[in-house]
Image 1 (cartoon, rainbow, N blue to C red):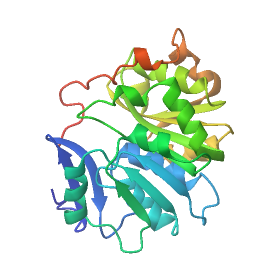
Image 2 (cartoon, rainbow, N blue to C red; image 1 turned 90 degrees about the vertical axis):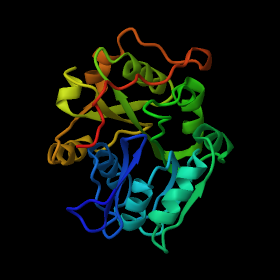
Image 3 (tube, rainbow, N blue to C red; image 1 turned 120 degrees about the horizontal axis):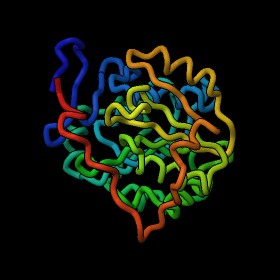
Length: 263
C-alpha cells in the first residue's frame, strides 16, 4: 500500500496485518517504532562510519537491510526469508538499491544460523513471525548458543519479541539468553512494560556492556518514547523463568485483536 504522506513510502501487509514499512527514496527512514529501536542499536554497534556484517533472520520488505546499506555503506548482509513468494514479491515491487550488498535466501532462519560459520557476523537480528507469532524453534537454548557461535567477539544479538503481562514468554527468553550471554537489555514502551497493553519488546544480548545512556536518550526522543532496562531492572521479569529447551518450546503468544492493525 502506498503512503500518501511520503511519496516513496510503502506499507507491506500480510494477511491484513502490517508487516514492514519502507521508503524507497529515504531508506534511512524507519516508520515502525520497534524498527527505530533496532536502528538505534545498529547505529551504536560499532564505529559509526564502519560497515557491519549482519545476519538477518526474517526479511519481510527488507527494512533493516536497506537502513544498514544506507547508513553503513559497504555492510555485508545475508537475509533468511522462508517465504519464497513474499521474497519474490518484494524483489519485484520494492527493489533494493543497486549498491546494497544484501543477499536474500529462501531459508528457515534457524537453518541459516546453524549453517553459518563461526564468528561470521557482527550482529544477528531475529525478526521472524509465522503469521502473528514467533516460531518456537527460534526461542530455545540451543538456538541461543548457535547465535553466540556465529557472532564475533564484541558482537550483538537483537530480537523483536512481542508479549504482554504477566510476560511469561519474555521472561523465558530473558532466562534463555542469560544462560548464554553475559549482558542483556530490553527496549519497550512504558505502557507495555507496565502491563497495560500487548506490544513489541526488543531484546539485546551480548558479552559486553552496551552504551545504554546514549541508547536510552535516543529511545526517549522517539515519537513513541521507549525505556531501556538492563541489569537488576530485569529481575522482576525473570523471576521463576527457566531457559527453554527444544522439547519444551512454544511460539510467542497470539496478539489480541487489534494489537497490530492498520489505521
